Length: 249
Image (cartoon, rainbow, N blue to C red; front, top):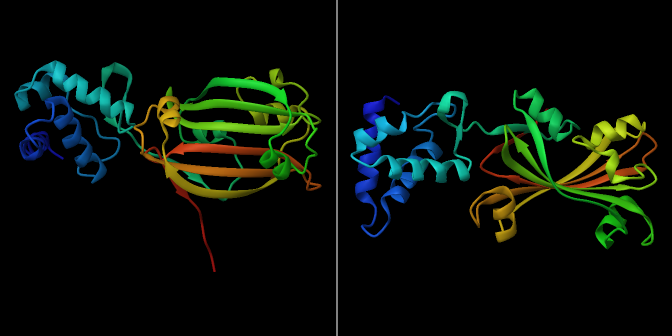
């Protein structure tokens, strides 16, 4: 979309909103509508704050606040040189057993994590059932926020029987790297996918709005001899992910 057309469409939308809405939220809503409808294409770079402020007759503070809200919601991201561009959702295959880090690297993104907790303990009833463990078994439970280029993208809880991974300290960034070193890397998996709105806790962890869509994937992973080695629940931000699978007849 040409700059002049962008400014015309943004002004048109701002003028149609109710008078009581703050200007920075009107601008945020207008830009979000254009992004979601693909009127502003994915990967496009927005004009600078000063250019937008002058063209829309708004203050730079108003423009900056709107852009920060869109970054928080995952619609925009900052790039090197202070450029702001429309986020490109990560495509995740549902037919390949790969770690989060492998997915990110394959798409040219920098994987990272923010640790929430690492612990050793007893499994919950759901975890014991998924991993075919007795209630008094020892498990390693890892909770972390997964990031792509520094932005929160998913919240992951991974559980592994302690007989395969005796200490949570063996995991630095990649769980699969730690499992590979112990020759217990999963070879196949069964996944269950569902969606639900983000809770207040999800909103805080993933920097998304309460009620925004999350994609939840539960994955049970197995060794070649069919022993369950991992049970993971991952909550993906729905606005940042496209899930892809190949079908054939």
